[in-house]
Image (tube, each protein chain N blue to C red):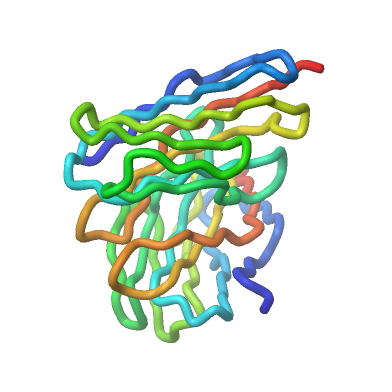
Length: 112
Length: 114
């Protein structure tokens, strides 16, 4: 079945440094790739998404890149701040469905 | 709009008991889904629905039933609770057909089965 792999599982960076989280998906027909941020005890919240007809998307300090040939997409956070500390999840939506297949999450710690 | 609401927030069950987790949304979203979240395993899809009267299984459907009689409500039923169903359950909804849109999550239900 469809599968999304996410790496790394934990990531620690110094405040002000960049953080990169990578995901690989199995269904080449997937067409929508959201990223969610989840703070401790809270619900997941969408932070950025990208569709299969776009290679890159930016929103202030956050960017997502998509490589359809390699079937992977990445989240880039620049100038990290302590409030960026959270668990981040990637997901893929197989074409023709409304399902999200989530990665297993990355716990990001930004050290002050 | 209240968005996506879930009740209860917390629940403790004994093995073998049954219960229903409630989920409602007031955004007229066609698509609704249930996930469970376990440490180190991310969010796994249990069941989903693309509209009233239409449901389908996700990755981990065993031990759970759903129905969708209205656009607003999508309850999740645990038939005979087992300790393996201890988890945090999230309901989510998104806008209607045509293209996959952002899923809005409810606040979650933390379930413990003893």
